Amino acid sequence: MHAGTRVRAHLLPAAAGTGVVFRREDLGGVEIHARYDHVGETRLGTVVSGGGASVGVIEHLMAAVFGAGIHDLLIALDGPEPPILAGDALSWLDVIDRAGTREQEGELRAIKVRKRVAVQNGDASAALSPADSLAFDFEIQFDSGAIGTQPLFWIFSPAAFRREIAPARTFGFVQELDALRGAGLARGASLENTLAIDHGCLRNPELQRFPDEFVRHKILDAIGDLALAGAPVIGRFEGRRSGHALNNLLLRALFADPANYEIV
Image (tube, rainbow, N blue to C red; front, side):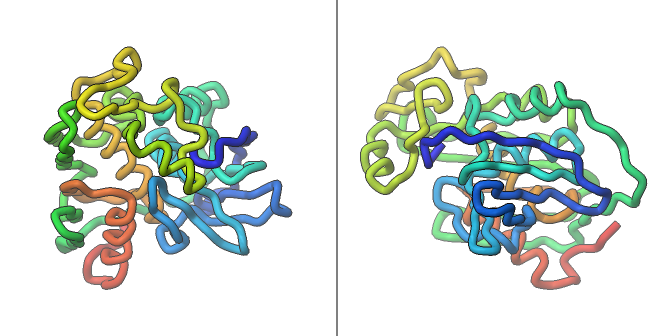
C-alpha cells in the first residue's frame, strides 16, 4: 500500500502459545511479535517494530487472522508490508480458507475488560467498557459528501465478520495523493484496492460493497488493532473518529492498570 513494492508473504504454522509473529526474511529473519507495545508508528497504518526492523500496514491481515480464530501464526515477508491485495480483510480470509487451519493443544486465554478505559485527542475518542462479548459502537464524520456521518453498532462473531466487515475496503482522498506519495506513502494505492474520494464524489463506485462501507472499514481497522492485545478482548469498543493512534493508546491505557482487566 505505501512502499509500492512487490512482497511475497507466507502464513506458516506456529507452536501453541507463540502468538502472531512477523518475520522479515529480507532482513536476516528478524522476528517481531504482533503486540500493541511493539507499535511504533500509526500514520495511515499500524506499524510494529523490533530488532532494527519493522512491518507496516498490518491491520487488515491482523483483522483477518483474528476473524479466522487464529491465535498462533508466523507471517514471513520479504518486504516492509503484507500485500495490500484488495484493500480489505476478506482477501486474506480467502487465503486462510484455502490453506485450512487446525486446532492445537493448550489453553486459550482472553482479556476481559473490568473497568471503562477511555482516551481522547481533540474531538476523536476511543473507549473500552465491560461487556459479555466483543462489540463495536463506532461513528465517523468527514466533511466529504461521499462519506458524511456514518454510525454503526456491531457485535463480533466470525460469521458476521466475514459477511459484514471483512469485505469493507480501505479508502483515501484523491487530493491528498500527491503529498502522500511525495512523503513516500500510498505508492501502491490504486483504483483497484482503495475507495478513492474526489472531493464530494467516489471516483470508483463500482468497488463499493456497502452504503456505509467507510465506517465498516474503520471497525475492520479497530479489530486489527485490538488483535495486538496478545489475546482476544472481551468488551465494548466505542470509537468516535478514532484511528490507529487512538486504538493503540487505548490498549496501552487498558494494560497500564491491572484493575482494568482480568485474564480468563
